[in-house]
Image (cartoon, rainbow, N blue to C red; front, side, top):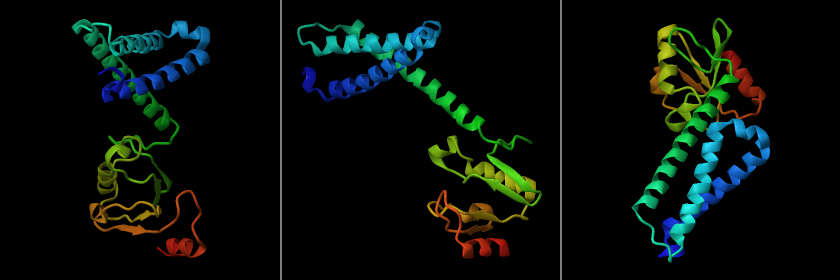
Length: 191
């Protein structure tokens, strides 16, 4: 079994990535790493996992249930640590944006004028963790503006169901991170 087992190959690959990440962290933090106990636990889990994985690969070693439990729990702890890092990363990303935080809304949008709002593209699925959830955008416009709004989707790469906003969505096919063409700008201003 040993090295030819696909699970062992995948585990080894993941552990190499974790080992590289741990090495970079050790190099980056140096002595201050000693005061970061979560990082120390994380590094201990990575090194323990590598040792246990090497023991599992060694066909002469009799791996018992205890070793398998250590592997399982170290993977669970590592996964929980990754979740915490992802949550902190999301907070960091969202903290740098100006958000509308009123009346139970937390949206990446801002009033340019009392009748003009700029916002990020409404999102569904995994993107909704970082971008505005389309349901929340729909609720915002419904609660705050009734039926007196028109949304301009300026993203050529993405489209969403206009029925969610009562058909009050106009599409301007502007390439992402590019200025609009002059005729697109004129069309926008005419509305």
